[in-house]
Image (cartoon, rainbow, N blue to C red):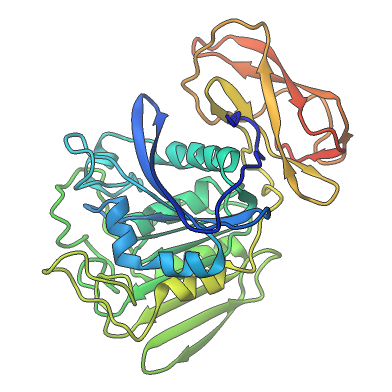
Length: 394
């Protein structure tokens, strides 16, 4: 059965065994690769965990380093391992554009936020993904990208977990809650506890490269976002643990600094002989899933964009009376070929009051903008027949 990409729920059958596949999706003229390890069983929608490899790594490398498939198999998850980009090689020395790191993806201004947004849309359309239980984790450069996803795709993501990563100091503080788990290594000499220039990446530098702040700044930043007002610290022989409290509704924040761990995924495997050997006294994959497991996001944060172009159509999440997501499709009028370069577009000229209107078979008039800047009328056609509450932000 062919699934329409603009339908946010597409029920397909899956076997009890893992269904592993190596797939690509076209984004901005590039074929972007990702691995799907689908352990979902039965007819229920499954959580989606996206795992972003480190700088110079690959999707397959991330599978081997983290051992996350063991968690995914036990819990019935869909684990997806995307590949970054490189101007020369398709499968090695790949990076993510985390704004100030790293290498090719940053220098070429690759829109990895767009890639991951479209990938989420596509996976929801073609797999048994629960749209309210989409999580992102990553290590090193992938962890920095995880921070960026948590900021820019806050309406799509139920929680993030950056590992052995850092932030740069110019991240915007926006008005929403984002559950965040932060894991760093106490002995990391690449992303150092005290911050500074990124060490030993061997991928080249750029004027856009910035030193990272001290690793504690990650918690301080997300505490501001989540409105957290207190902390409780604890420690044992394996790690230092900080839990932030008195956070805004929907906000949750924890951090671990793993003792004896360098630049490696704690509890995982070293990617190569000369790389740091991860400690085995702390299993990051298990800790991350335990953090993600109770989280879900069914309502977009105020002030964020919930509309994304895909194949000349616009996806907008809508919600039923039971807060379950259903599909909605924007059909452009008049029906002539149109190009889109702005792949995330703020909705405009909304002709109804947001959040207070129930739709059964109605339409919502919006404005769409072409590449040339001219506006054309567009109509939102609700696909699902049941009453739906639109969560549209102007």
